[in-house]
Amino acid sequence: MRNAIWLACAATLLVPAPAFAKLANERTPTQEGTFIAPAGTAFFSFAHRFTVGASPSYSVANVPTFHLSAGVLDWAALGALYSTETATVPGASQELELFAKERFLDEGAGALLSASLKEAYNMTSQSADLEASLSKRLGPVTVFGTARGMSNFQYSGQMRAVGGLGLAFSPTPYLALVADASASPMRAATEPPVAWGAGVQIQIPSTPHTLALHATNTGSTTIQGSSVATDTVRYGFDFTIPFSNAKQWTDIVMPEQPAPTPAAGATFDAKAFFTGHCIACHGPLGAGGFGPDLRPVEAKGDDFIRNRIKTGSPKGMPPFASQLSPADLDALVAFVKSL
Ligand code: HEC
Image (cartoon, rainbow, N blue to C red; front, side):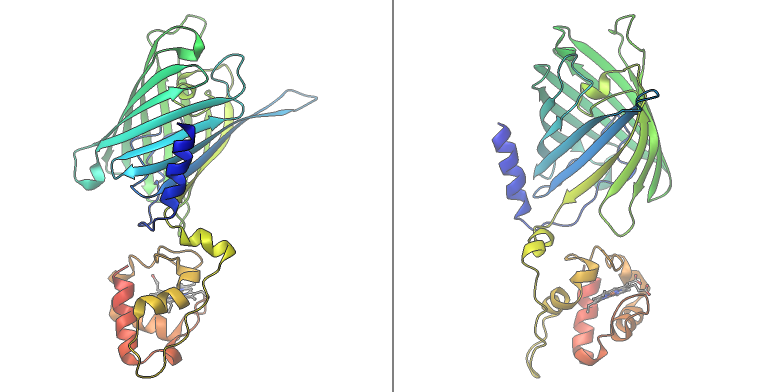
């Protein structure tokens, strides 16, 4: 089972797919929301949550969770969460959760709200865990709801049901202020009543990555981990890394050579020219990197795009006027608009 997940993830890396990113307002610290990696892509994120011990040692303890998943269908993903130091199961240090997740309603595709179901097996607590998530955008606010069921909570032999709510407020598309809380009617009197998280999440402009800074009284980010309220407040971050395109990774060891300028009279291939001259800064899919994301540039008009390509920019783009005939330039402008 574990090998199958790694294989599925590896296989998706070989298939070029559209760029995607999990946005800043698609999760909260203890609720992962309804997002799944699209078919043919893999998704990696890691969360680190720290506590600092008392004087004089000030020893730092970290609860990290690594998430790797692969989109097998546009609405279904397989993956695993792994923590090398968990606060979920008393006495256990590592924690592994294997999961399948399906999104059956997608607001981005016109549905009234987004809804997903995650079926997981927590190997550490030997528990079948289920999580239903809803999310709904209302202007700059996204509301999250989650219901979880666990057959062997914290390896205690007890079942557990947990319900939670979350909010993300996005004053800009790149920024979200987030908070969430969840609780169980089945908790023992000795347990802290509420598992909570709060923080700031940033979509790093011109990259497919998000960075979250948060405070929470939970440990790992598995279904169980997000449901265990501890007495300790941890401060940490998480970072998301979508793998949507194999080429950007093969480039590390086999960089693409610039395409030779075609001989006079040869037909101009705008895509090949783009690959040879533009992707180093604008990314293989034009989604940006050192240079800006080119997908929205169509709105600035043909003349703007043509001039920028011809003359470049003092902000770091070289001019291409001498390498392109007017007809070539037209073809390249059309290609840029098609990104
Ligand atoms: C060395 C890096 C680099 C290369 C190579 C490069 N660009 Fe750029 N490009 C930039 C930077 C930086 C900007 C932002 C310039 C500015 O805002 O003044 C930019 C801006 C642009 C814009 C305008 C985007 C906007 O929203 O304002 C277009 C269109 C564009 N580039 C197309 C291309 C094309 C097509 C190629 C290949 C023929 C290319 N670039 C090659 C760095 C690069």
